[in-house]
Amino acid sequence: MDATENLNLPYILPAQAQKHVTHNEAIKALDAILHLAVLSRALSSPPASPAGGDRYLVPAGATGAWTGQAKAVAAWQDDAWTFYPPRAGWLAYVLDENVMLAFKGGDWAPAGFDIVLPDRIGINATADATNRLAVASPASLFTNEGAGHQIKVNKASAGDTASLLFQTGWSGRAEMGLAGSDAFRVKVSADGASFVEAMVADPATGRVRFPAGVEGLRPQLSASRTYYVAAGGSDGNDGLTPGTPFATLQKAVDAAHGLDCASHDVTIQLADGSYAGATVARPLLGGGTLFIKGNETTPASVVLTGGLVFSNGAQLRVSGIRIAITTDLVHGLSVGNGVTLRLGKMEFGAVGANADHIFSDNPCRIVLEENYTITGGARRHMNIGAGLLTGEGRTFTLTGTPAFTQFVAARNAGIVSLSSPVIVGSATGSRYLAETNGVVNTFGKAATFLPGSTAGTTPSGGIYA
Image 1 (cartoon, rainbow, N blue to C red):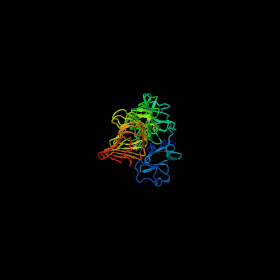
Image 2: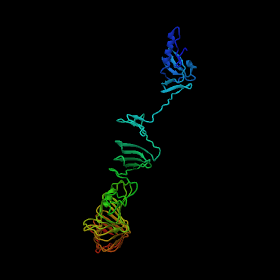
Image 3: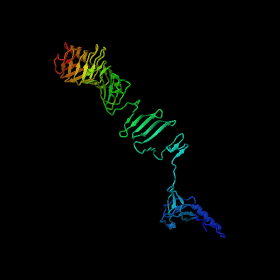
Image 4: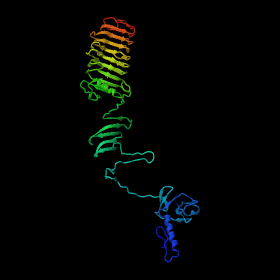
């Protein structure tokens, strides 16, 4: 043999003259094909000014000095092109493509390697059959290779779990992700065994619920809500069902004011029984009307022993309630600035001294939407200062001849407007008082029309019409 089997390097033969020539040829070949890195495989003709040691893979159809040398390694050595035919298994790194090629099957092709990957990896930790990747370190970094970076946790079906579990001493304390459904959930635990849902995001609507409640945020309504109140209830209840009622009307009012109503209404449903009054100091956040509802079939079954005070633009409807107050100076309904109050079926019983059934002393609007009964006396049944009380076709039924200082009073440009009223029964006291530009308008009814035992008066610019 006069050459090596793999690289075809020439041997120095016995008694050979000029042995250095053969030796140098072998060194030259080694320099060309060992650690083979070529500049390109895309040139179809030799470069005009190659540098010593430049190497290329000759493509098919090459011209010039490369003609007929397709697939060979062309090396510029000693100011001439030397060609080295490749053998199976040679590797060549192509610099301008950043790709590794292998010569196999008679051609250059991207090098492929069969690598057996382990089924688990432990980095400073021991992986197991469940935790196939285990890492113990002060921190783990996932950064971008470009603009962003995503971490993906995939599950096979909706009923499976794809989540992140946070532990203390290998005991679960918080979990977030898709646990058993496609709703995003956040759960917490004090012991690792029992978990409480803190947040659930609906995948269809994006709306978020807080099943355990929330502090510092107002619950936002997506539909109208009813709070229930019963004499045997508890203000520690949630008030959301007849079986879990509040005990007081004021608690229900306060709960309604804690909501973001998003234009939805809130109803407070009072069970039959007796209750103290309440104050509604502002409108519902987000709009909507506050309904205070008792027994609309038999208002006498739901009794308020204290007054209802409305102020600061509250929007309400009150119905199905009997007013019966023994405390002096406490009005049945006190209507403040900017309030709109709609009255349904009511029963007005007696109130204490110097108190009225319906009282206002600021601009407001009171609308009588149902017929009602009057079974007890007051200083005045209607005492409207600067506001407007209006009713059309309403019937007022009086029983037991209740006593009033005046049945109706309109003061300080206040207006009582009763269109087509019907009075059933009688009362004692003055029929009306219209003073300081106040107006009592019965739309042409006689001055003796309103109940009472003495004539009405119109001092200081008052009008009765």
